[in-house]
Length: 504
Image (cartoon, rainbow, N blue to C red):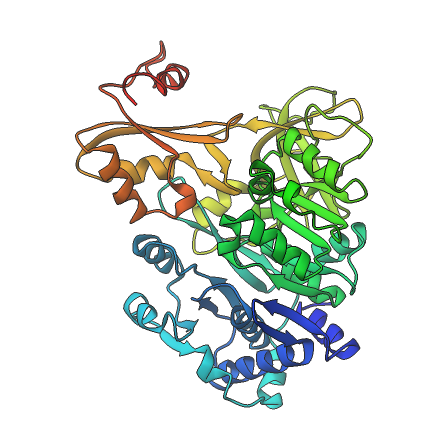
C-alpha cells in the first residue's frame, strides 16, 4: 500500500452505502465521501496543482474530510488551519507554509480572502459542483509514492514560530495498520471524534475508521462544555470507541458525568496527550469494568504514538506506564552521554527510530537537523532517530514509565508546548520587561510570571489575540523582580512558592 486512499477505496468497495461520517444532522456514505473527494481532486489536478501544500481553512467536519481526501487525490498534502486561531497565529503559519492554495467554505470565505492574500482560494461548495475526471486523477496518481507527505500539523516552536511537522503516507499506513490490529478495530465500530483536525489524535480517528470501514461520529465541540449533552450524544449514536485526549475524559469525571449516564456500548477507550490521573481512570474503570483502556504515548513527530500500555483492570496503579513500543518502531532510552539505558529505574531520554518518523519540519532545516539526528548507537549505517525530550525509566515489568521533560517543553491540555514561545509572546509587549513560564505537572497548571506595568487582565486579553487558547497560561502573576539562584538564573522553585502569595 502506497497511499491512504487505498483505505478509502477498499472500504467504499466493501460497503458503499454504509454511513462513513456523521456530523450532527449530516451524514455521508462511503460512496458519497469517495465521489466528493474525487471531484475535489479532479479539480485540483485539472488546474495542474500537484505535490503542493494545500491549506484547509474551515471547522472540522464532513467538508474538511472531503477536502483532505480530495487534496490527496491530486497528489498534494494538506494542513488544516483552525479558524478559531487568532490572526497572528494564522499569519505565522502562513509565513512558514507560503501556501499557494486554500480551500474554505461559505462561513470563512471572507476571512480567508483577508488572511491569504497571496493564495488562490477555493470554496468547497463550488468545488463539489464539479465532475470527476478520471484521466486527471490517473495523471495525479503517477506522483503517488509512500514517502510523499500526507499532512502537516503545526506544533509550538521555541523561537516563537510554530513548527510544521510533515508526516508521510508510509508512516500513517504503518501506524494505522498496527494500531487497528492491536486494539481490534472493525467495521462495527462507531468512533467518536473529540480531537480537532489539526491535532494528531484525530489522525487515529479518521484513518482507523476509513481503514476498517467503521463509522466516524464527529462530536460537536460545544458538547464538551456540557457533560450531560456529551454523554447523551455518545449513547444516542451507540459509540463503541473513544480515542481521546486525557483532558476530555477528565472533563466528564470531574463533573461526575458517569453518575448521570454511562455510554455502555463503549468497549475501548484509548487516551493520550497528558499523564492520566489514576483517580480519574478508576472512575471510568468502575463504570465500564469490561472496557479495554489503553495509555498511548508519543509526540507528533513520530506519527501519533510510539508506545502503548493496555490497562490491567484487576490491578491498582500508582503511576500508569507508557508501556512498550508499537510493532515496527524502535523506542529506547539514552543517558546524557548518549549511552543506552537498560537498568530498571534508571532515567533516560526517550528516543524513537523507524518508519514512524516524520519527514521533518516544513521549511525549517535548522530545527529538523537539531531534532532528527543520527542514532549515536549505530556507527555502520545511517539510522535517523527523533529525540523526544521526554524522560522515562523501565519499571519492574520492563514497561516504560514517563518521568518528565529534559527541557522547557510541556504537555498542556493535550498539546505539546514550548514555554519559551509563550514567554517570547509576553515579552513582545512593550509594557513587559521580562517573563518566565512554569508548568506545575501534578496540578496541570501553567503559570506566567512577569515584570512590567501592564495589568493582568489587559495582558490576558492581548495574549488571546496572539496565541491559541491552549497556550494561554491559567494564571498570570505580576511580580516586582525575578528571584535569582546562585548560578545567576531565574530561580523557578522560588517562583512556584510565590504563585499564591500577595503578588497574585
